[in-house]
Length: 151
Image (cartoon, rainbow, N blue to C red; front, side, top):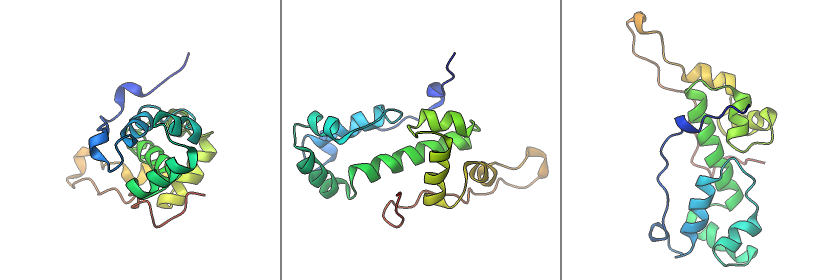
């Protein structure tokens, strides 16, 4: 039996072709958002928008401001952060967000925000209601996508 967290996913605004300078890029972005838990090879994404792989990478980088790989990695990390805040297990999150395994999730999350999944959950957890203090602001934030390398 497979456990999923699909029902608790945040609503993601689906990009459309009108959102981007290149008219066909919206199809690839929508596909990425819908299939984050699956492998997303460049030839498949390029085929969706009827461009060669090289041209797709160039158009994507010019339009979005980063390479497709970087974009996909950051989207997976953001989704993982959201699920960690919801209290899901790192192993399940790794599967749901398209990471190879929990170790891969840990390495990627640590490279982006400097914390392991458990550290992120601890930093993001609100205080108990009876303390009289307001919940702390989460320390872990996704960086803008350009300041650290995902590897």
